[in-house]
Length: 446
Image (cartoon, one colour):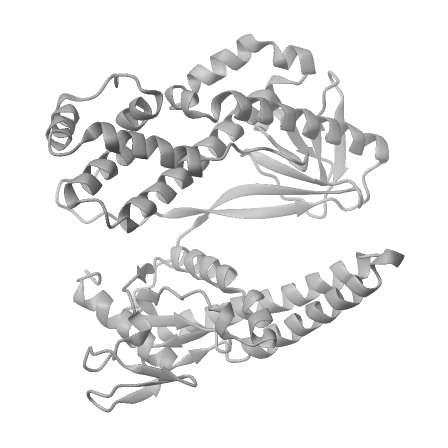
């Protein structure tokens, strides 16, 4: 615990997911044992979804020990003959999915509240309060009195409630939740999680616990790495393969010479453009264009000859090679960006989703294949690894505002022009400069 008023130091270690693979095809008998675990794992998760994913489950899923005790008494584990190391992991995996789903539901309802022009500021404030405070959110949905509410929070609720028609707003909230909330469901038995008690590394491989006592499945691995954390095993029965995901902690690097503050924007043709006009990943458009053209041709040929049911093994292999080439190039250019710019803070203009209706057929297909999500994920990961602060700038019309004078301008054929000051520049440079200026204006550099 640091002293009050001191600056919080960045973490010394961060989490990263690594993967392991089997070296030889897994025997059919052993694969059946792993599939059986995955099927039971899915059964447990779907049971938890059905029983606790509704509004009544809100009273029990936080922190989740009530669900754990009720699942123990349900007799499902005995019925499935599933080891406890898998059963309780499946229960808490399902609880995590339910909590995430409720988070999405609240975000959707909050967006509707913010967009509703018929509400007064006081009504919006009250609805936001209900969505934010768990006890009141649960009580409104279940139409019960809230329990265990601190006096200060209760006092704040009473003040807000007195300013609005609370009954009408509570009915609105329940109606919106019914509209947006969806119960999760595990459709495929694609894998399962295992705790440290359920596996053992030895003999260049891993021994995985099965439903049979004192009988473990041995899988020879491609590496000799050993981990002691909770793992996730993903199954590929048709290929007789597995993939093991392990979370590890890696040391965070600190660079004394990284002192710059950089504004960034992303585009389909050039991956990154800084506020000073430096470009990184200028060949991304060519790589993505070749990949999109190949996928489009393969999809058209497949649809034409679908009656002959052609195999997809070669298609998947080449598709993976294309994606690996793209990802390798993206990571290479991100490393070059960090090495040359040496940023202490990176201000990223949140890239707008391309408007498909304004594009021709070829361009819209290319936009659908844009690796935007992967680029953002890798940039965030690398910033964490190098102790670089990453700030998203969410200003409205950021790409339509002149970064020189702040007035609204025009965009045409990739060029931004301002009728007020006469300044003309590339759209990406203008947007990156706006991101940098907005970040500096808010004092995010301190």
